Every structure is written in C-alpha cells, then in structure tokens.
Image (tube, rainbow, N blue to C red; front, side, top):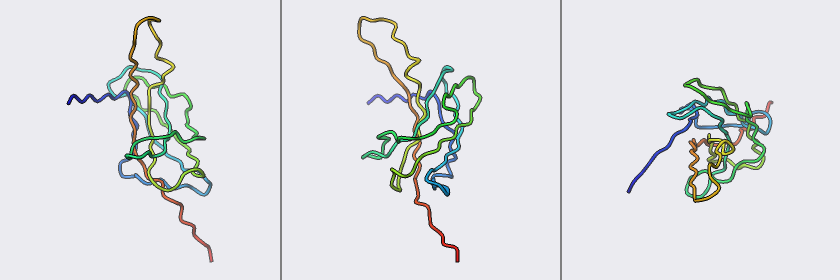
Length: 137
C-alpha cells in the first residue's frame, strides 16, 4: 500500500485546548494561526465542518465567520485567524476546523486531455461542549 501525505498549510491550534464552549451568545470562537508547510505562497480558505460517520469532516457549517476572510500565506510567517461558529444548528460533540488551498487559484492549462487537480486540506478535530448554565442566587 502506497501512502502519500500532502501538507500545504497548517493551523496552529493549541493541542491542550480540544474543547470549545460557546460564550454568552450563541457562537463559539476559535483563535488560531495559519502558516505554510513546505508549499508555495497563495490564498487559503479556513472553515468549520460537522463530524461525519467514521469520525471525518463532513458537511460545512453554515454561517461561520472567518477573520480575515481572505487568507494569503507566504514564507514562514504565521497569520492570525479567528473563527466565529454559530452553535444553534450544532449539537455537542466533534467538529472539524480545516485549512484548504483556494480552488479558484488553480487554473486549467489545457482544454483538452484529462487532468487531475489535487487540493490539500489539513483538518483538526475539536469537541463542542454545551455551555453550562449558571444561575445567580
């Protein structure tokens, strides 16, 4: 069996911080850094995905706000990234945060013949925990 591993970019998520809890509102905020890993500079996309059967990234979560919305990586300089994830359509449990090459920058060189475009994506699992309600007495 031949196994090839591609990394274009990675997110610097704190490995000790695997749990995400919503704040006082209905959104969970994840702060991270993105950086290149043995790849050429370019535009990348960061998103959040629901957990699919088999414990893999599934459907993209709607309404995720990513700042900055356009992420350009170059050299070995890390860029700060903040994700604001709505929790209203999610249930507590695993979710995925992924960084992917921007498909729009891949241009076709030839209109004839078959081509294979490989987009690389690095994903990291986090666990969404329901916010504990505390009552003031």
